[in-house]
Amino acid sequence: MVVRGIRGAITVKEDNATEILQATAEVLEEIISQNELSFQDIASIIFTTTADIKSVFPAEAARSMGLNLVPLLCSQEIEVQGSIPLCIRILIHVNTNKNQEEICHVFMRDAARLREDLKKINTAE
Image (tube, rainbow, N blue to C red; front, side, top):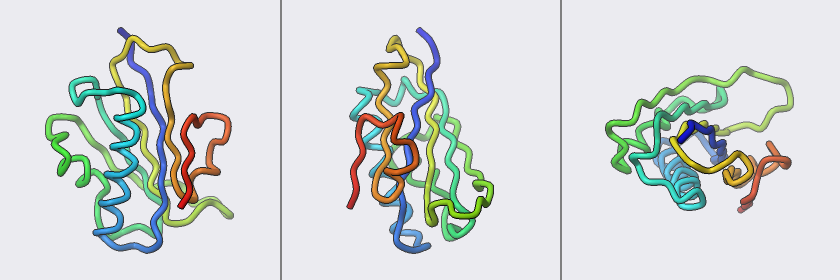
């Protein structure tokens, strides 16, 4: 078994705690489903947000889903001109027997254009 990283991202329409928590839970649930993960497989999760998200820590969504023992960290993305606003990015470290090619990265809404080369699922709203 090895540790692999799984990427995900989603955007929100505004800096609103309810919307941020719902969006974060949505992308986390999709990552977990697409990669057939159990909570026990998750070693840690890093969340980043763009500077325009300030109302809530996205990690709270993971806690509300029951990921209470998983180490979680929130940070702010560097500000790059022209980057996607109101974006929550996720890097999940998982213990798995899957190889890199079997990992499903999930980019949703406007974040779908972040990594066209990585995604296996790319949904827009």
